[in-house]
Length: 117
Image 1: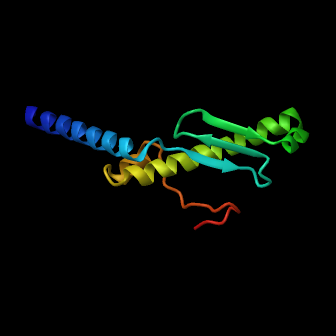
Image 2: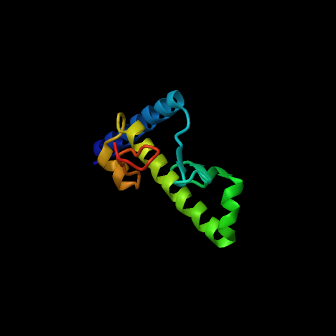
Image 3: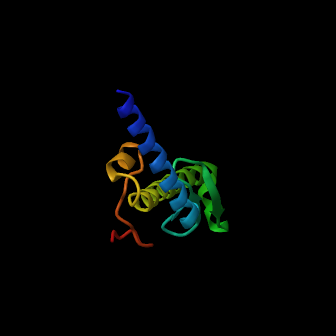
């Protein structure tokens, strides 16, 4: 039993080191999304709060509730994009199934017009 625990602990340390080295080389993983008209743009991290929110003057015409809803919608899309990018980045060093189980789902990329690639 102790050998199994030691092997598992060693694997966790090895994966942790590989992930740390990989992220150090690639830099922070973020996702970016914009509303269809470009009035709201959000940059987010996987599972974290938005890092940047840009609102154009035209977005102010949505009113406070409409603007808030649009920011939330775009922020969720940016966060999904960041999670997908994290999955793509780490699947080289971590089993992709484990990443999906952790909530970092790999999605097909969308271009600026919403077309999937």
